[in-house]
Length: 171
Image (cartoon, rainbow, N blue to C red; front, side):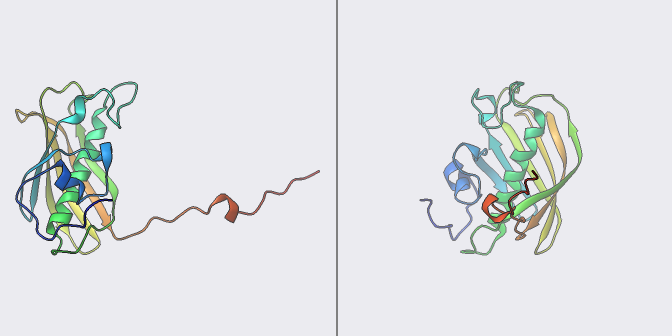
């Protein structure tokens, strides 16, 4: 069982500290290290993009649109770091991504760690907009764009099969 949500937000943290603050657990926690953050920015590092059994890898490899998930996790971490002490994580959903530019086809061919950065452009209690970028260790841009995150809005649950009426069978 995971530890309780920590009360204070450190300046830097490792993967275990990140996993305490975002909903993604196990191998789906893609970020390895928080490098720096402020109320407007966050910078994280990920090193798992070359793993042959990466959870987002397809038969074609780790395609560059997967960088959006890395950025979304950095945004979730940023939101958790900005939360009042003891507030706990808030559920959020990636509502849209816009102006996404893919400078590479795949991430698994990128040598060295991925640099994941997000900048909070605007926000209120229930919606936040970020600009994000994922680059290689030398600063070469791989993927960038904008994302809108909607907070504290549960997704509609589809009725379970037993809740649905049985189909009519005609003779």
